[in-house]
Length: 158
Image (cartoon, rainbow, N blue to C red):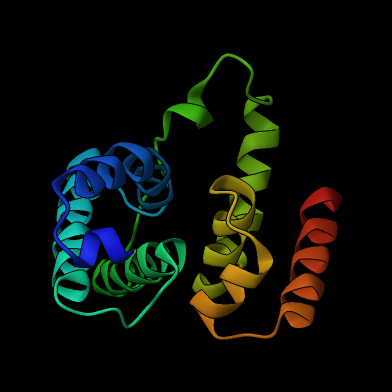
């Protein structure tokens, strides 16, 4: 963060190269089209630049990136009347479950609140740690652990 705040061009390049794939996966799981995902990625990185340049309000880059992305995703989803099921490449891979299992999973997943969906994506898809998710969503780690366990149990029952 210090290098980013100082305007180190190498740090910005490393930021984009390292974080873009993980952040893109998170965003793409939440939007209807690739164009929407790219537009949100642009908005997210624009906001990151505005927050980082000249200040050091948030010292943890993971928290800054995903908190910003989460805000943009939730605004996007609130504005969209209906977001069709994602067409993320991981969901369309050859190793995917049967269509019936996938359909059951998505029906169940869509029943969760948008906040719970974000927590699940951050933890299971993006690999963000519980302490970091706690700061991103403003909940205690113990509460998040209970939520994750309950959601996992519910999803495995389907």
